[in-house]
Amino acid sequence: MLRTRTLLTALLGLALLAGSAQADLTDSLQKGTPDIKSIGPLAFGPDGVLFLGDFQGAAIFAIDTGDRTPAGNDAVKVEGIDGKIASLLGIDPKQLLIRDLKVNPASGKLYLSVSRGRTPDSPSVLLRLDRKGHLEEVPLKDVKFAKAVIANPAEGRDRPQAITCIEFVNGKVYVSGLSNEQFASTLRAISFPFTATDQGTAVEIYHGNHGRFETRSPVRTFTPYDIKGELHLLAGYTCTPLVKFPVTSLKAGAKVQGITIAELGNRNTPLDMFVYQKDGKDYILMANTSRGVMKITTDNIDKIEPITKPVGGIAGLKYDTIKEWQGVEQLAKLDNARAVILVRTPTGGLNLETVPLP
Image 1 (cartoon, helix red, strand yellow):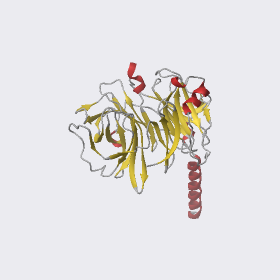
Image 2 (spheres, helix red, strand yellow):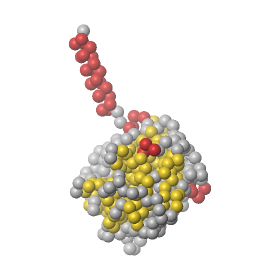
Image 3 (cartoon, one colour):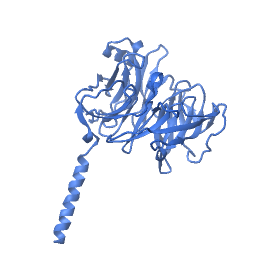
Image 4 (cartoon, rainbow, N blue to C red):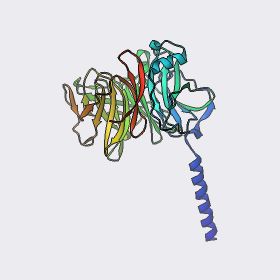
């Protein structure tokens, strides 16, 4: 009898393992046509699931791209990519706005959120680029998807900042942006599969270059990072504080003060950032509007003295500017050794390039 029970237990365990092996993020998605009003920030989870920020509709969509076949290891290079996209969409390149660029880790293909105009209500398109430089529009009809509605989003002229950046980490979608509350700057942690959303966490920071605490300036871009075994979000703000938030502090309805760990220079806006490893060390790579691409050290990130007093210039974590990377407007990690960048040329066009991580 004991042997029979042991055998049944073993078989049940194998069945559960087989079931979990077959399960993926797409299992919770339902087929249909999502009511997407705009396409802004992008993020990928496993299994080719794309998380898409719809700032006009105040929603996060999870889309099954069906894109899981490895596309090879080729470097991607497309000169004049703005002209190629404009030709595909039938618009003037001057009307094109590329809002985000991300790499699907399941396939290695690149995804771009694109606007057919430069106003917040211009029609949006999702494009896919393979390793050979072939562009195509990603269909968003009759796809498997799920939707999470963002509570209390910013209104009026601030609506495009209702969703500024998204990341998927450990079963949660983290979202930055502005709410319509008095403490407008907000971070949200939305569990996936989507069930319900809440009002998010109001976040406050000390801005050294401004010499004051701020609650209305949104996080422009952020990246997850483990510090001494605790998951944090490293967040970049305009003018340019770098702040860390432990994700355990992001509770519904709470008001949280981030820890300012660097001031990277005023009159500047961060664009994209991610963490990578080089020669046994971790670095933060950040693209900016006016101070180039920064390689920021994480040395002593757990011990550095928080910035709580006015700063004239730069302070905190040290960085080097990657002088060879001029005019970078979008930045994404391609693999452990390379990044892809969208570069504005001296003549005003856009090139897409693959570059080694510095």
